[in-house]
Image (cartoon, rainbow, N blue to C red; front, side, top):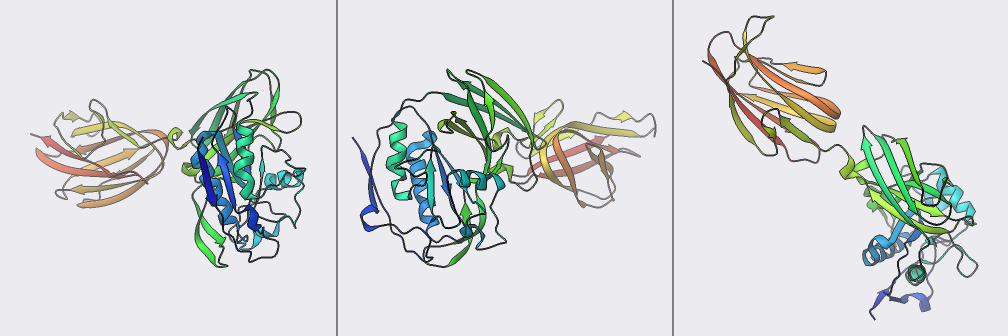
Length: 384
């Protein structure tokens, strides 16, 4: 049987901030676990000097227990520790409703946490030094239900499909949480860290504070419009099943960056362009409207956001055009141009060069998608 020993050091800089007794600073954690999953609702605030210690403990437990533990950090506005630095506001109305349900008050010491929405020793709130042992006690219980989720995101419209395996009806809560938020936090030494990274921050209760009923072995599908104020690349959905006593019986978390529209650039007849590519095209067509010979190339783009494209030509005599979606940018007879397109999902693109007489033009298109490696397509247009 393995044991994990974690040591805790804390200094109280604010009177109501939780002070850890000497005899509770070292906790032995038995790694024996069952099949259940556990929700740790961490109550925290930017003005709490001991809260970074609790956040570190939550991360240690998460690393140890993996998917069996889901952590959600709530910043209730009714506790003064969440308002110490007003420009960094991580509060949410639903967080206050849960906080009041757990009997939280403006004087409740932070940091603190609630495990599976349950009371332990007549209190919902648990000191973070006791989180490990209390979580493992719940993991050793037999699970009454399981919760599976599938998420899809297109044009900031989120679809969540939920499946429950159970013998009875439960309430299903769907939460949006966000991680990797760079902001402010009071630190244990009393300093203000303006580059602190907040993780697992509760943002919204998508289907209401107390969710919706889902039948035994039932399915649920919901669609939600995502606010532009969240970085969806760093977001996740937390699903929680509650029984009639508002006790957590199952919890699951699923991130959805991979469900978003990834950058894809393809050319009809060639396929996807994932590296710098050079091609020659010479299939000249006569434009029936202009009567000029032209070479056209087309394909598909998949992206969500602003796509920047640099165009470099080997000379300034080309008469060319690049179109994406409903926007076209024509040449300014310059050797270098920069343009940008707003892409929401999948869009077609095409480019063509018109000739007055036989010629060769080499044009390089460099596509720059945020957080993606730039992709360059160099095309040699040949009209003999």
